[in-house]
Length: 402
Image 1 (cartoon, rainbow, N blue to C red):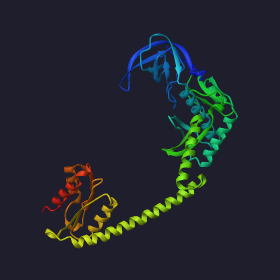
Image 2 (cartoon, rainbow, N blue to C red; image 1 turned 90 degrees about the horizontal axis):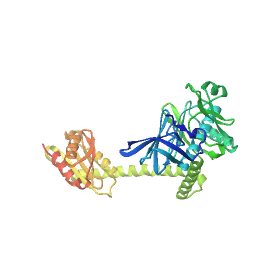
Image 3 (cartoon, one colour; image 1 turned 120 degrees about the vertical axis):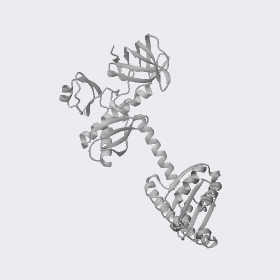
Image 4 (cartoon, rainbow, N blue to C red; image 1 turned 30 degrees about the vertical axis):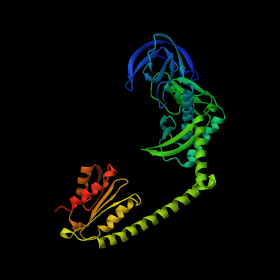
C-alpha cells in the first residue's frame, strides 16, 4: 500500500492523523526499535541530500524515516498499536531544513544562471550546508555575487510553489535541471528565479528563508564545494563570527578592521623569533657537544659513548641538535633521552659501526614504545615516560656489547 505524502502539498503541516498499517520489530544501532508504516504521513524521509524529520507517533519517538519506494517507513522507539495515531513533527528541525533547502535552490539557480556554475550535488548537514559546483573555481566576486543576487530575491518575498508535470512539460517551462524519469514529477518553483524537480520540503515565500550566508569554497575532486547557511543558522553563524573577530581583536589590541594586518605582523614576528631561537638552540647544542666530547673518555675499540637524560627544562628539539653534533665526531655514539615525554634519540658517527635503528627497536621492544630511523640516527618515544632512565641504561648496555 502506497503511503500518501502530505508534505508534498503542504510542508507546513505539523500535526496529522493517520492509520497504522503495520508495526514490525527491528533493530536500530543494536537497540530494539519498530518499523511503522502509515496510510498517510507528514514525516519527510531522508532523501536528496536532506535529512529526515523526527517527532512523535502517539507516545513513540520517531528516530528515523526511510523512503522504501511506495511506502514511508517510520522507525520508532516503542511499539505503536494498529489503528488511529496522531503524528507530530519536530517543527524547529523541519522549518530549519525548509529554510536550508529552499535557500539551496535559490543559491544554485544564481550560480547557474549568472555565472555558469551548475550544481551537481547538495548536502544538508547539522550545522553547515554544501553544494558542489562544476566548472572553474568560483572567485570571491562570483561567490559574493551569487549570494547577493539570492538575497535580493529573498528580500522581494517571492512566492514558492509546487508544480506537477511530466519531464517534457517541465522542460518546456524551463526547468533548471532536466530529468529522464517517466510519469508525473514534482517541482519547486521560485517565482521568476528557479524551477527545479524536487521531493523535499520548502517554504512558501522567499522571505521565510531569512538570508543566505556563503561561508567558503574548497576543491572537492573535480568540483568546488561551497559551504553556506540560511535563516536562523545564518544569524547564529554571523553572530559567532563577530564574537570571534572581537575576541581576536581584543587579544591583538587592535580594531576589528585591523585584525588581518595585525595578525600578519604578529605571525611574521613569531616566525622571526622562532628562527632566531632555533639557531640559538643549535649553537648551544654545538658548544655543549664540544665540551662533552672533550670530557668523555674513549672506551674499548676507540668508541666514545655519550649518554644523557634531560629533564623538562630542556626543549625536545635540543636532543636532535645535540645528538647530531656529537655524532659528527669519529667513533662517537650518542644515546639521549628526555624524561617528561619519554623521548629517545640514538645517533652515531658511521665509523662507530653500530646500528642505531636496530638498537632503538630492541629497547622499544623491551620497554614499549614506537620509533625508528636509519642506521646512524633513530628517534622514538616510550609508552611510559617513567621507564626512560632504565631504557637508556639498557641502550648503553646493548651499545657496549662487542
